[in-house]
Length: 206
Image 1 (cartoon, one colour):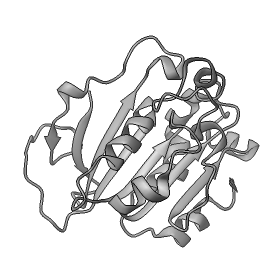
Image 2 (cartoon, helix red, strand yellow; image 1 turned 60 degrees about the vertical axis):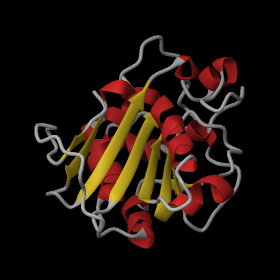
Image 3 (tube, helix red, strand yellow; image 1 turned 90 degrees about the vertical axis):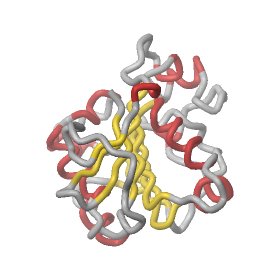
Image 4 (tube, helix red, strand yellow; image 1 turned 30 degrees about the vertical axis):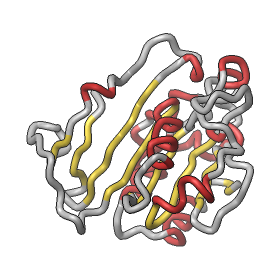
């Protein structure tokens, strides 16, 4: 189930979107957005609709959910922003205009995790299309086409195999890899330079 939850000892709010679609070469969805709800605890047992204005808000999307998270952020009202957008193998086109559509709604930075070995968001999106309806290898495979000072991109390398990531689509679910490479992006104390430093020993930046 998709859920909006306060994590990391109640310090941040994370909305995680995990969606499989034809764009990802999978026939069934892992999330039903109509079932989404807010919760203050990681287990989702304390539903709520209220969060304090000073609580950081991070939007995380994996696969088709990464494409959805990108479009949701771009569609926010002019006076609404999130703190971080974290995209994991997103099925969004590499030329999607992050700078003009997404960055105005992100206060801190956007993170993108990509792997050229990921067939679902490489061959899959070339064949079936990305979430934004383009038949191309997605940003989840080859990264975004345009650089931005607040865009941090992580490209899979063979060194990631040491922490359980073989470069394929489901390898992002490795708990070891997530602990080493993904969770630091969800830590409010980790800024862009610190995140790059955490990545440095196993990643090749785009």
